[in-house]
Structure formats: structure tokens, C-alpha cells
Length: 408
Ligand SMILES: *Cc1c(COP(=O)(O)O)cnc(C)c1O
Image 1 (cartoon, rainbow, N blue to C red):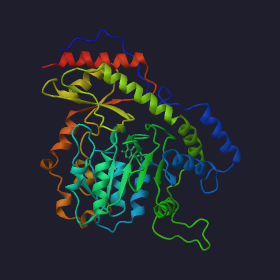
Image 2 (cartoon, rainbow, N blue to C red; image 1 turned 30 degrees about the horizontal axis):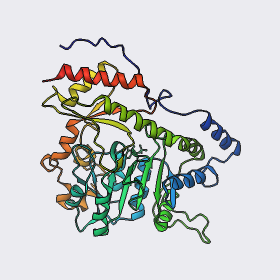
Image 3 (cartoon, helix red, strand yellow; image 1 turned 45 degrees about the vertical axis):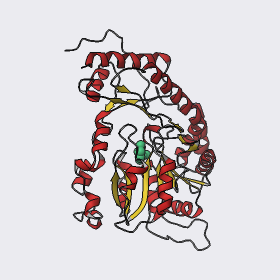
Image 4 (cartoon, helix red, strand yellow; image 1 turned 60 degrees about the vertical axis):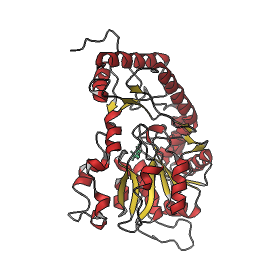
């Protein structure tokens, strides 16, 4: 067996508690204002409206609407496009389940595109081969903080007149050719869950520059009640997906810190990439030309023919040193989960899968070689804006020494 490490364990800041979250006086001050105001609902308060205005201004879009979660944001975006039952939405199987189940709730069929095995992002090419006459929309996920190739993807989408939803939950302030993700497609979606670049525990945001989509999204968040209309009614089927004023107060304070958080994450990642240069069998994160990667996580690509047991082997040795990395990221592509395999949806109906083309539900592994390769080779390192020189040196040394122990 391998020898034990001579290094003393360095405890890394974690985004699950105060060691790696920047929550303090600024948040408390705004929270106190909400409490004193006595208005905790966004329908009557000031903080959610203010958050939405600032978020929209930050990205340079016309409208932003806050909602209950990133999952809600995806649901709101899909609902705004109003698919007919059985319509197809092309997306990725390497994502959070919260980016997929809303499609099914709206009666749409997720069709899974392959990904680039190094970035784990969908590409113009992988999306194009999944389009059909039933494609209603494309949902792209900017995974780990790295933008998809939006130039090519938007050219494709425009040529087929297909709206694009961008899932930016992991990619705050990430850019492609100088433009923020979330501003390319019809709608951008964000999450403010505990582990995202900014957080209010749970929360989400949708952005758009299309006024009619903005209106539909506002309504979908609000039980489709026409607030402020001369003769308001509940116009269509929808839910209460509102955020509270308490959450918006925290989010407003977090928003002020976002640029600094992103800069520090990028600086730390750039430094680790420099420290890890030249280790054979290991690839540091690929950053596409013209992209600004904002590092929700820091991913290594591990070559299992050079390093024994690949990403899994490396992860085990890093765990011994207190570095909790995730080989395979989400373990398996989403379509391998029971919800898709057994079509567990509404009672025993299997709706909306019952409406799908059989080809759209072909989840056989030979159709997804790139997706399986991507998951097999990826090692996801936790990332944090509070990493210091000492943390980075510890991570780099741990990786170097572990790789040498595992070298074939
Ligand atoms: C976190 C996340 C979501 C879901 O957001 P929640 O706020 O947890 O509901 C959706 N998509 C991606 C890519 C995510 O990382």
C-alpha cells in the first residue's frame, strides 16, 4: 500500500459554512431593515424589486425576476416559452437534476446532447445532431463556470429559430467573447443556493431583454395573477415561486461582493493552474479562446492510462489529505437516474414520456461515448474565493505527490 503523507493536513475553507462564505455585517444590516419594515413578501416590499433592478443592470439586460430556486428559475424559463406537451427541449445530461425535472413538469421531453469531453459543455455540433421538427428550445448549461461556445450555438439556434435558455447557476459573470453568459439566449437562469457564487441559502433569478417573456415569467412566479392590471385574474396554470424579502436582502448584500468573489476565484485558479503545469497525465481546466471562466469548481482531467485508477484513485489519495474532490461529478448521466430509466412521473401514467418519439428516449450508453468519457476522466475540486497561497500550495503539493504515487 501507499505510504502515508508527511504533510500536515491543511483545512480548506468550505462553501457550506462560514469558513468559505462571505456573510456578515452587510447582510445583517439589510435584514434588519426588512424586519423593521414588517414587510416580508416581495409583492409588497422594496428589496426584491431592488435586487432585480441591480441584477439586470449588472448584466445589461432589461429585466430580472427573482424566484425561489435555480430549479424554479429553469421552470419559469421553460414555462415562459409555453411548450406543447411532447415538445422536445435539447439539453445536457451532465447537470443538476433541478435543470431537468422542470422540463417534464411542463410536459416537455428532455433530449440529451453529447458534451465536449474536456469542458463537459454542450457544443454547436453536439446540439445540432439532436434537433428535430419537435425541438421547442435548447437549454445550455455553462458548467463549472466555463461558458459554452455561444457564438456557434447562437448561430445554430437563430438559423433554426429555436430559443435558447442559458443555465448560469454555476457561471456568474462568466463571459464568452466579452459578453456575459445569460445575455446570449432568450433567457438566463441563476441559482442562489448555498454553494453558488452568491447565496441566500435558496433562491433563483431569471433574466431577459424580451418584455413579453419577462411578463410571462413574472406571472408564472406569481400564480399568474395580474398584479397592477385593471382587471386582474389568474391567467394560466402556474405556481407561487416567489422569493421573500429576507432572502432578497441577503442577496442584495451578496451582489455587492460578487465581482470581488469572482476575481478572487479566477486569481486562485490561475495560480493553481500555474503550479500544476507539466504534470503528465493531468490536464488543468480548458479555457476556450475568448472565454472568462469564473470557477464554480476547478476540474482536472485525469488520464487513467498514466495514473492508476484515474480520477477515482487520485480522489482517494486526496481525501486522505482532507481534500474532498468529486470523481465523476454527478456519478452518472442524468438519464441513468430512476426518474428517466423508470419514467416515474405522475402516478402510473409515465406522462410526458408517453408522448415522446422513441429515438428521443434512447438512453443506451453507445449513444453517449463522449458524455461517459467526460464523467470518467473528470475530477472536480471544491473551489473557494478564500483560498490563500498556503491553501493553493497544499492542494498543488497534494496533487503532485498523489499523482507520483499512482503513476503507472
Ligand atoms: C445548482 C444548479 C441548479 C439548481 O439550482 P437550485 O437552486 O439548487 O434549485 C440548476 N442547474 C445547475 C447547473 C446548477 O448547478
